[in-house]
Length: 355
Image 1 (cartoon, helix red, strand yellow):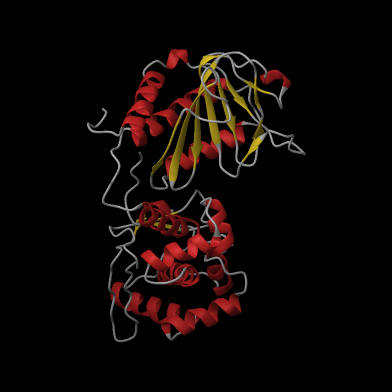
Image 2 (image 1 turned 45 degrees about the vertical axis):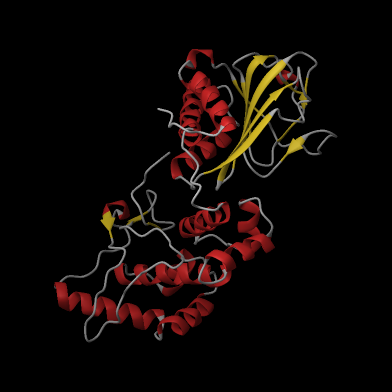
């Protein structure tokens, strides 16, 4: 249900989404844009996925011959770095969505009163990075290679629209500045993607901001800079892995985003005063004495394991282990999760709660 007191533009888009999700029979074919070898003049291409929905009239993507006549209810999904070239001289009303990790962009076009290059209404709504929405966008990107699978694609798009409707129907948090929200979104995203080769530039590009802006946000709202925060997250993850699993140091380094195990060992010792091998031996030895059993191998189903977020295990022979995230990070009990095989390990600080 819609919450009362939405701003006028947000209420406008909330009504549009209600009309779409409550009348799914009006939704038509889902088309897909592709990434051309060259970008023709006038084409639109960004590093974020987009979705155009024809509300009235006819719409076309001039880069694809079979997409020259998108009828009312048809949709065009444009994966990140793909392009489209809006065209057509017939009247059309269009809803365009842009999916960023930290915000949802909404634009309404009506070429009867303005150009398709200039929206009649436009808003950006902050929202946290959510796994379900990201998974749907990833699935749609993969399905763009099999566009004929409409029996799978159409329900997926409808679910995505339901998520968007939930975001649009949420009143803005006027007490939380946009920059602060962006900071927390980036911190959460780094926690989920710490094993990847992250740099200030790559994270800034993912959030569609400049590297200097990223550094400014961390300086204003965090307790440490981007590089220090990334290292802090990786070291915290490494410590938990060393506590729980029998892995080689090189494998622990790889799973924490370090391809150079010697560099990883130097950083770990600098932060904790022990090498990873010494830390693992002390902690696992103490655990065996305390519990009388060996720790589980890495092949155990990680999705069934839960680790207290702020846990302290102190013995005479093991260092104190206490994780507390800086900068107002997610603070309830996380689980140690992975996909079917533990090629990467994620620590989520809250139960999965979708839009």
